[in-house]
Amino acid sequence: MSEANQGSVIAGFLWICFLSILLFWAPVLGPLVAGFVGGKKAGGVGAGIMAVILPGIVLGALMFFFGAALTGLPVVGAMFAAGGFVLVVANVGPLLLGAIVGGAMA
Image (cartoon, rainbow, N blue to C red):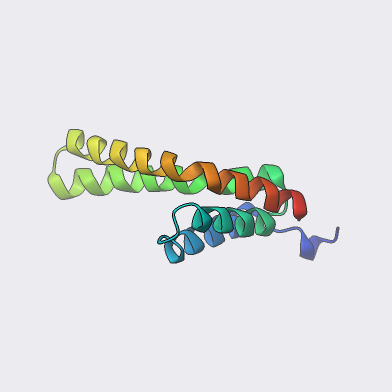
């Protein structure tokens, strides 16, 4: 495979974020498609899995910092982050499956 065709975790991450926002209305099919495209853009199964995990980490950190900054209470920020973590975990199954299949096809 040439250098131009390899892909990157950041490209997969960006595609997963964009398509997850765009396809939020399709509960299972949306994350499956987003994971497939993100895994394919990432260039492999391992990179696709990293591209799936990265948005969850970024989203949890952003929710913690913004929740703490907006309320002025770090404990409330931690509760917001925990709520966001639950939503991300509920969404990660089809996203991960799509990324594995897309990464295998890359």
